[in-house]
Amino acid sequence: MIQLNTGFHFDDLPLGTRFRSRARTVTEADLVSFINLSWLHEELFTDTSDRAHMAIPGRVVPGALVYAFAEGLITPSMQGTGLAFLHAELDIAAPTFVGDTIHVECEVIEQRATSKPGRGLVRTRNVVHNQHGKAVLSYTPLRMMRMRDGGKD
Image 1 (cartoon, rainbow, N blue to C red):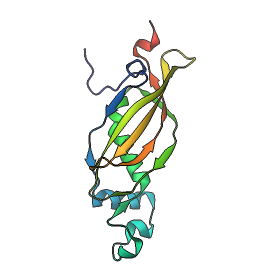
Image 2: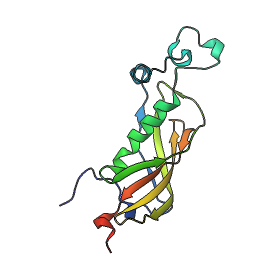
Image 3: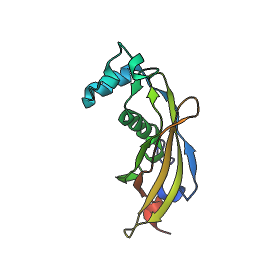
Image 4: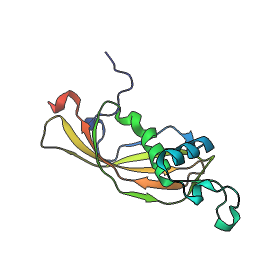
């Protein structure tokens, strides 16, 4: 029987594999909820009265929120097959604003089996783009992934 909502297995992700997430629009409610949840009560994110002195054209959102959304957008790719998030390096390339619509483009840049059967390590380069195609954030997570059939040949 085919299992719905199952992500990629290690075996499905050879070097060079590329995929794209769905898109989502960042809302004012998202920003306010994240600020209150994380306690990032920084003027940059909370003061709407005088943006001109900051030379920022809109409501900028924290990079941590963009990262959290990126992870949420790619979660279907590892639903039920991801075993551990082991490491990541992250760079913020440009601001993301309330009203921006983002998606994630992923490319497998490393893949290797582990010493334990049934699992392997996969590193991807994940780039978050806004609705204009501009890269706003990138990160390279290393994840432990389940192999099909426990890695048996």
